[in-house]
Length: 226
Image (tube, rainbow, N blue to C red):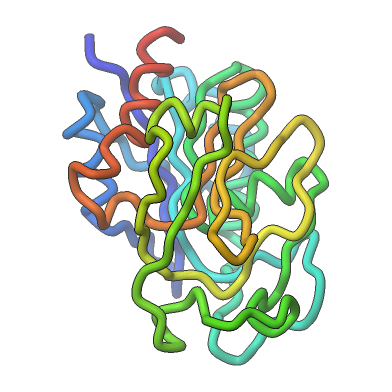
């Protein structure tokens, strides 16, 4: 049996939304994707999580938990129903030791859950020489994995170019998490858990094809052992 990967979604005006590139990336790595419903309450979550072996928390709008600073005008707030649903799903997955991959919003969401903090506008607050957001004229930037981390094992020693699609960024990592990759300007681009079950990346690997397949391989491989 192939590992079943639950993929959370964005939520806006009563509709769930999911970029199909997340689905294709999971399939390419050998997993079977299942969309996580947006539940009205936490009661059905336990039954749903019995169906999945891994969890993917994808990108989305702004994180407000653990926020340092005021959100700029060019990033939207997340719908409270998505925030609630992601919280229920994340808590249940952690209780079951289900492996988790967090992408952009997803990485920040997990970090905030564990008590970490988030820059509302990393470019302004850290005085960066160049933006990390496509909305502000960025395209790509480098990233270097930290030696000895899971992220380093996946991508190797060389500096990789990744897409630039974020305004917020991690300020301090949460409990039981550590930094596993940074951009040349010091911005945190990857974190992971001490127990090896969670990997988070700030960029969008689903938009990078086979080059970033190892990121999704991590999730599917771990889910297959679960």
